[in-house]
Image (tube, rainbow, N blue to C red):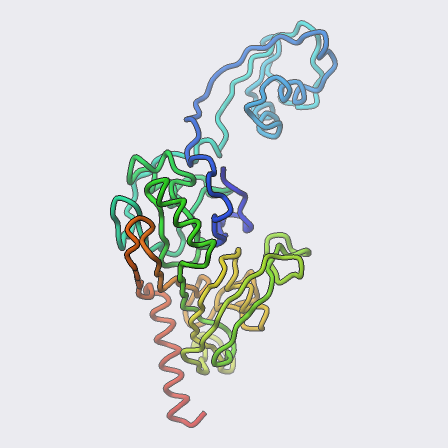
Length: 352
């Protein structure tokens, strides 16, 4: 079932699901509001109301039951109680209006326009727009790619995470592969785990990046700021190859600041850790443009992290056919890239 996002209101995990082969299907049983009637036995006399309900109604978390109490959904002998710590007494009759949790309402089909690059009976390749959350999580229970997949084909309901085998951050655009059958999902997950799926990203970073280098630093949750990931010794092994494609000095026309250096880079993933490219480039003092979480600032007209999954290639999990796909930069990054390219040309002509 969904995992909490690192950032409030954001999906933003890009970690592979290869370790979760055989996970439960994406959709839980539909949740509907119902009413439960309970009588307090002698053994529960004097218990807190929320503790009593938690012991009796195990399908819901104690936190959710507490919120139902506070919202007036629980009556004791006909009187609404809104204090979770209130003690119950033997013989009292409780009526609880059990509203479904936000999480249980997340696994519903939502028709949406998906940018499908390729599709057959076994898999899909999708060009995800920036701003779309891939998988439901706290703060994003509807409108996700998973909701769209559940509406797109009937078989998605029986697949782990509706066939999603890896994800992109909410504000990262670009290519994703999704399985449509359990056989394809399993094979794709194993191919990702075996590093047999090639993924390349275009990014805009602060500073003048070296022409070519690799970052091989373990990534784990930041021990200080828990909404972030970081390079930590006890993290999971991660490798990113970086190639600089262009660099230049760009000056914000709306700000009275001197020109600053920026680079356009191609990043090749060898692993798929959470926020991997963002963390690795930030660790080298080259955070992504507009990636505030990892030290980037607004520049080149970008208002979201300047990261795009541009190339994806793998063998078809059923036929073995070699497949390769490319997705052009979306408008915001295309304009930012062009602005930097223009600045780089000007620098070259001026001898900078």
